[in-house]
Amino acid sequence: MVWWSALFPFDSTTLPEGFREGVLLLAYLLVLMWALAVVDFITGRQLLNRLSIRPRSLEGLPGIAIAPLLHGGFGHLAANSGPLAILGTIILLQGLEVLGLVTVFCWLFSGVGIWLLGRPGTRHLGASGVVFGYLGYILLRGYFERSPAATAAAVVVGLLYGSALWGLLPLQRGKSWVGHGMGFVAGVIVARKLPIMLEWVRNNSGW
Image (cartoon, rainbow, N blue to C red):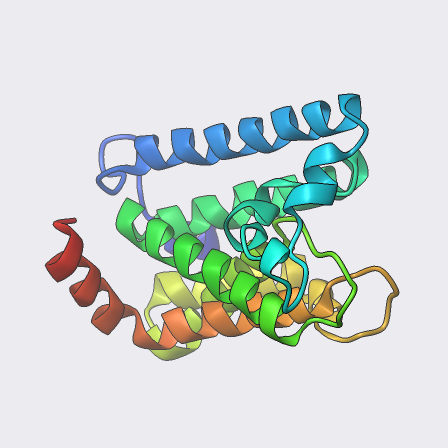
């Protein structure tokens, strides 16, 4: 199939450098999330209560770094696990450093955005901001790059996950639409500024 060849133009001998390591990192991340979910369940939601993001609260600042690892329940975690793995793997086809850049930027940007703009007295947690960041990156990278692979990825992901964009609107109580929106915006920023951001990372981190 033409679109499949454009989206995945690699065989086992031509995978981008760091692909296998990236798959392992995504797997480790999911294992960590599920392990923390079990611990949180056993301890009566102690992690959730202490480490979620609380907007404009000093106690909520650590949640910017930690809250994406925590979820409100196994159903919440299961809903994020599939898209995180699938979208992350698609981004990984562009290289491990691209996946790392998109993940870190969306993780922190969405967390800071929640802390600054979320409603007072609320608690926010979960990897949805990163997932929406992945979605925004893939969809808009296809537009900015205009390569066959990036365009095919955007079209396929749009067909698979386009309905998730309703999560950017405050339509459902209990959903962190601020986190979804900030994550999506972060993904769009990386998609637009990818060459510049990669150059900065390489110059300052030795990647």
